[in-house]
Length: 64
Image (cartoon, rainbow, N blue to C red; front, top):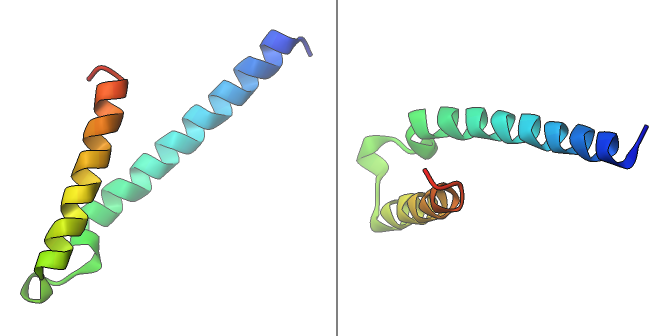
């Protein structure tokens, strides 16, 4: 296998792993991070803000 073929295989594996992480992240967000609405505190709001900021950074990197 050539160096380029190895790079392609590594790239594709990382893309697939990223897709799987996105799926799991989506499930966790759909579950409201596992916190019941009546249990939400400012700490939870801060956690959601950190997640949002991190996702915005990724979106900016990907130019979306």
